[in-house]
Image (tube, rainbow, N blue to C red; front, side):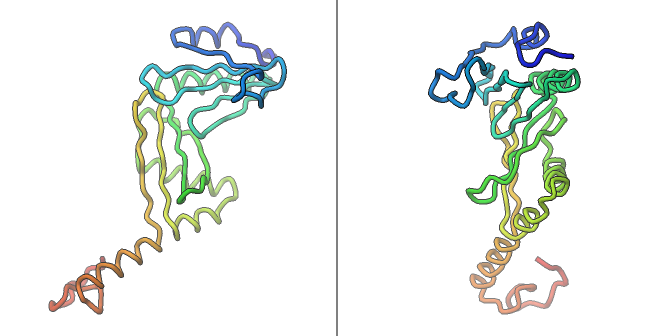
Length: 196
């Protein structure tokens, strides 16, 4: 069985080429750590978000608004190594779903490139699998933004999902500005047969 939480030789080898800082519970922002526990901050060489590896009863990997806990077992340890390697190699990115100022969820995607279609699909599947279908309905109504973050990219990519409220407001504004009563055809013209 893997050791419960220390920084193993394999973990050291994975992060040895990066600047790191070790934090303890004695620091103000790290008082959530218990006595004897530590958190290793892995500095992003591109100036993006840093990765955090908490050494506790198992391990926790944090990146942006996402985190995953790995049990102190061989399987948990191997999953941690795989995910950490994927982040550092640029083969995994994080999607954080926001609706207005409300955080909905965060999840990781095992792909090297941020892809809008994949991010949208994964968000729906993640919420459905987690039994959070009410958030899918909420997003359909109010809209959302998906913030995609990769360790190997300097910037985030934002994907907007327009909710039905926004679509209705946009249509109403267009109709008001055009002076049209119908909304499905240009003012003074014949119906086009196309919905907007």
